[in-house]
Image 1 (cartoon, rainbow, N blue to C red):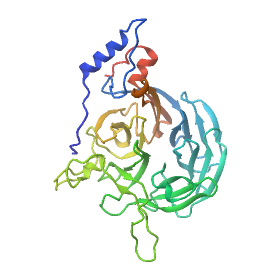
Image 2 (cartoon, rainbow, N blue to C red):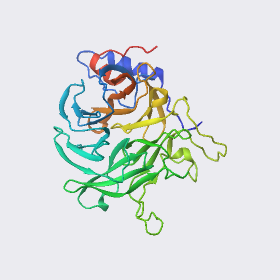
Image 3 (tube, rainbow, N blue to C red):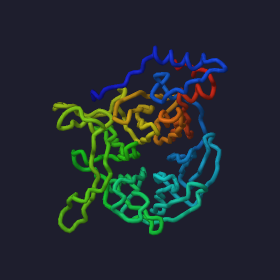
Image 4 (cartoon, rainbow, N blue to C red):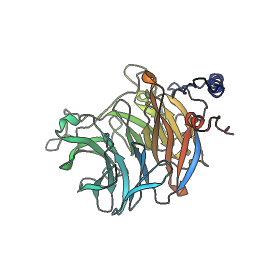
Length: 384
């Protein structure tokens, strides 16, 4: 079991902070809770459920939700009301939003195309066939190294289980996507390999985090996605230009496996490590989706454990929420940030977490304890 340090919550201090918030008088200034001062051990609460039998993946941009099903892309508000829609898809399997929040990318397995739409109204902007892609179970967009490709908006990454790689394409508004190597491949035991790539996201420092659901790994690995121009290849083949695994923090020199990943991995000097799924806090049983809030916290859909794990920017386990009743087999996440504080104390944090639970035909909404208090002016219900 990984020995990465956990961040414990102080129940006494949390209770004091909550009482101070609720007891403020009419003419008194009410302190806004800071995002790091979570009021409960289970800081996100089951808030609502929305029927959506077709939902496959969900993303957010500029406070709006984007939900892809096999044949459509829908833009929704936070109450899950439809704002805009785009049809014409035949077997859409994955989506992401570009870092500027202007373009939604969708992989359509039926036509074997990457398609892109306007965030504002889902107007179709273009499509391109990508023959090298066998399939795509997840998409992500990242800017690291984009200066290598003049006029490109972002790199778009596709996790392709059929080709056993994560493809990288440079996306240009006028010319569409062009192949630019890979982020990682499945073979090998080194830090650059991801055996069973699923969800991907960009963290607060611009690095990429990638879920590896391999049954002997069950972790989330962190990459500097910048294409490595010195990455070599066999004679006659194009250089893969892979990204480089980087640590969350270094606990020993040279860094141990656990420094590069969230989840269970070998610690400093450990020679008897054996990987596998785990239900222990901070560990995973098939992590398949990951997202990051504005304060840097990393949320991982722990699919096999029916929960979401939350970690700090430097990889420390914070808490988990959800269970088989409220969060069965989560497969996709969208975080909606709310800004709290004033001036230098401003911080964005995930006030809402939307989760696709395909076995139930629903999208679930969780609310943070802080935002619950802000809306209802009373503490959240006690979780048994």
